[in-house]
Image: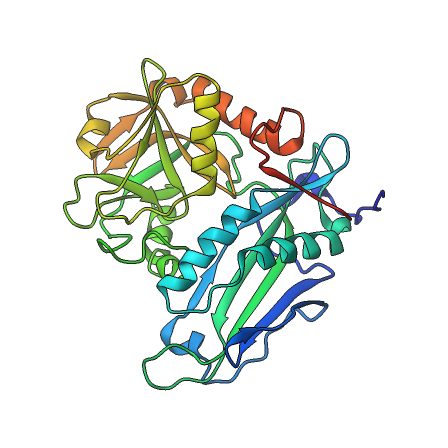
Length: 347
């Protein structure tokens, strides 16, 4: 069924929030999750003693809904977001939201907001943000007695204003996550501590920080909001891994690894030292995540030292471009979805 789209300048959307018609809400109390339902109320009403305000019990996810070339509305691998949020909640002693219920909630709220899903070819998408907070009252250090699960959706443009223009990173003097801490879950507390380094990087002219491991400051981990990918001169895709389990398991990264293998590329997933990057071993670099898919990196600065990536310095390099075009082609319905990653939404 065709849905009339909202009258929006889709091609000029920024990556910013605007309210849509419906959100999805569900509450956990007395040891179980409620039914859950759509709502037109986009405000939360919480006690001043709600656990979220005092002990940061909060986890969230990010995924997108797209309009395909044939007009279908789809989401990309929401089951993976459901699994990651389940694991994140367990780490913070929160009742995990059931995975099948998560996927159905995503489908329900996207379908209800079908008019807000940008048209194919606009460059915009519908960003879907599920989150869960400790909503019950708690004053001592303990898990909250009640929880609120919520999904908001909003149409967005590109995450980085320059689109596919290569960006500059800087090595952060701060640490992103403690060894064996919470770096491998998607929780707001990880992003709160990244705000100061991020703003300092922006004021210095950089798009993002690149964090090294907190234990030895020897290994490359990730940026404040994305995983990192490298490409060697022979076309090998090198994917940094963590000795201390402090890198977020990006769904986009894992999908790109599969795409690379499908394309016949060699993929090397291993710890990567900053010394390797400094040596000029890599000819391309990119950041990957839901918001940007892949953003090419032209340079990384460490104080006065500048590491350039010659095959991707002035424009997105050939390997990153191929990976991005293939993944977005699968998402848009232009290429075969051989792994059943795309979930159709019945609007």
